[in-house]
Image (cartoon, rainbow, N blue to C red):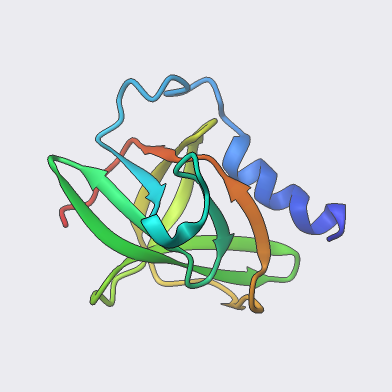
Length: 128
């Protein structure tokens, strides 16, 4: 994979690390589902990857949907059985916001980009 393809994704996920870097304001977490094959609860950034939202005393099963626009990948989380997509908007290192928004770009190819992520703290949680 080329640097120009990975760089925008890395910037999206790792920029603005000063805000909520410790996840102290987290209202939940995105973790790889039991079938995600990552022993630490991490997950791969690819469409169809099973990822659970854990927060507020409950677990909501879902999956990632990944779209590409030129060399920019955008990851969305979708609850199982739901139609709404929540973009993973960077909050800090290992933290994200879930923001309901229509997808931008075209569906990414199978397995793309495939980057492994550690579980993410969610600092703005939708009502699920």
